Image 1: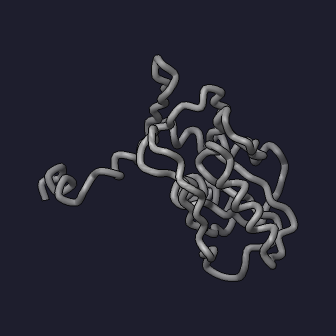
Image 2: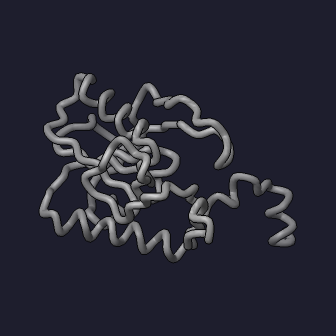
Length: 174
């Protein structure tokens, strides 16, 4: 739900899962067949996991970081892990690169550039996200919602950013 000022968007778990399923449908209806999924941790982990299960494709993970804490914090530089984690083999063939959103587009661009420069046998790379912000310089191949006002997106799992084990123990009286 978009706030009245258009600067914040609040997403429930149900809305979040519906967006992932709608993304799966868009990819399926495109007719494009891919061999592997590379999700960007942390934001792309949940969508990547669901897509991996729905399409029955192997899931690879690359850790990335580009945010400081909070909506008003200055954007940090994009940091990429040196390696990609996958159960066996190497990333190759037709690869679907998955993240939660294209905010500035810098993370998607940096990962795509790294993959193209690596000695991998990637024949085709396409991108998929739930949201594209109006300020993004990258338009992913697949997305569910375009957000022209570029709001700060409050995702349902963000409560865990500040929830500590002692608070969980209180919640569950354990």
